[in-house]
Length: 127
Image (cartoon, rainbow, N blue to C red):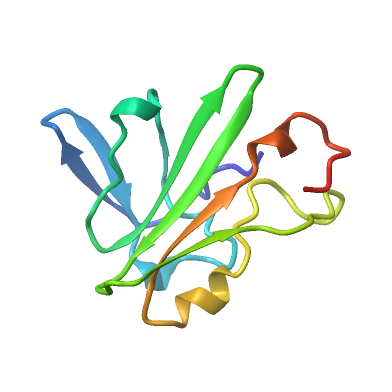
């Protein structure tokens, strides 16, 4: 599992008067996106991502310690590009893989990246 990177700059946002979610400025994201603050999603049914400009990471954990990881990069754009990674050499890459991040960050679009939760089931799965 990829840990949160210490020292990342982010801004906390209060949602529904109690839940704090975090947004990291897009220009401060590293090439993996892992330095964006990770917010745990306790229930899928009541989840609403942050609508502020910037990057935010989310994780919902299924039974069996399988994680649905997402990275949302919100820019001032009406276009959203959604990315799911391809095959993944698990000996070279850590989970979650947010592929095409560097490319899409250079475009004037918002983007969302998902990590495949089945990869958490077995280290020999290549995705």
